[in-house]
Image (cartoon, rainbow, N blue to C red; front, side, top):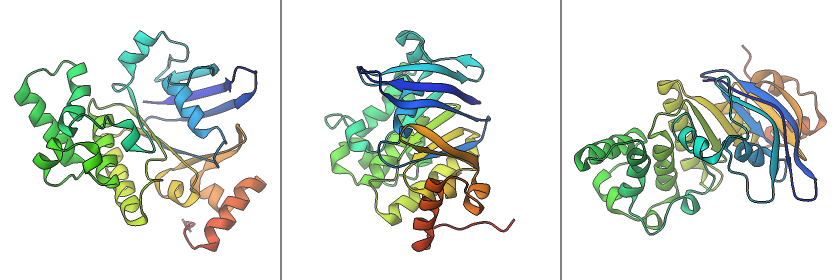
Length: 263
């Protein structure tokens, strides 16, 4: 399913634009990366798309999900869309997950909301989801609380919950930032595999250009609430036009973490 954002602006109570006229689109099955430093507006863009902006912030413009305008829909209608047609994975799963609820029950929750009620069906589906995200010792993990698990395991669980109802668009907001390099690579590989298998449209948000370059086929670069550059991933890696993008690329090359294809 395609996702098209046009003239998206997010303003605070004083009228200051934290996102200013953002326009981008990703085709069905495409992989878009949004990159920028803290305060660039990338995460606010995602929250606006999902209809999850904090109190005091207002979104205007247009967000089309598969051709349907979803910006400004009533909350009841958005609840029917979230998790089913579009879902989001957040940066820190420990804060996104309920620390007082066992993992199995949490993963089952989106399934219950979609009408799966029987215990045996829920148990089977939850086991399948945890297996899909490469969780080992599934029964133990299902009985565990989030705080008893590692960061990598928690992020896999958050991903399983986001994919539980087979959304057509997945927004991943810095899903690997809080993880060490080894686990980060595992989660990125898992995410790419799942997106490829399901044909899910992906919007991947990060401050890390090398990470985005491994996941996305298109990149949008944001700074101070505005898009400063956008284009194909390899095009931007080879010949960035914005000075800010050039700075990001130089920093990445200095630590030998970004590769430019010769294709």
